[in-house]
Length: 283
Image (tube, rainbow, N blue to C red; front, side):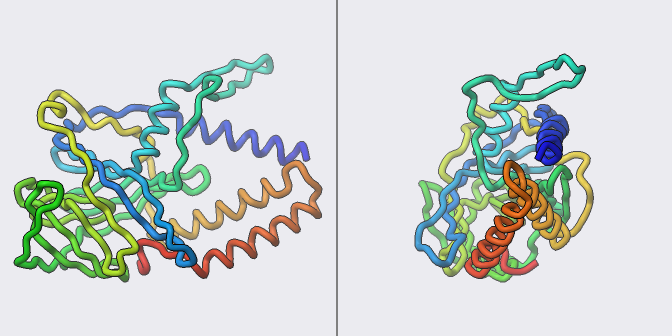
């Protein structure tokens, strides 16, 4: 048991060192937009998951990430502690009473006019892959007012789903939530035809609020990443989850019980896999 405990503690400390928050202030903030996501990730239930995401727009690129994830970065940056142990080792942690916000969406997406780049972690490695900007938008001669903003309609088939987007020509930024970009105006709302997923703009910073501000995103979210493909990134995360489950299942119990727990976890994972409803149905 001590072996697993040491391995687990080492992983926690090493991960903390590798991902200790570092601010990166270079891009001038030209726009900041908050979207609310309503998503049905499990076909067995009708309840929708809701979470806020932020789109930070600079001169030549835009960053998209979960607001909860970014808040977690901020909390860790302000509450991090370093303890020098008697044996010469260093332990990184957080101040007593501090709670780090948790989310399942720890990815970062960078949009440019050239491509879309996705970043996410698998175990202790930061991986990334690139995709071209969506170019098969179908622009429709239909308008609609959404949250007092005049919008135009566009359609696209992307990753196995049909989407309807409403973009604002009066906001000439070719960006939007997730990987949706390439329209002649900021995407205000986008929904798939089954209404399983819906992103809608709910808040933005005014011009006066943007003045003198920079995009403050933790640099380790998107630098030093290993280039890969979308399929390989997903497989790496699956393998990392399975390995972590193996360690945790054995931690604090007997190997036999640990093996039984692994079997139960794998059975539950396979059952849940049948009812998963991912945003992207194809790669």
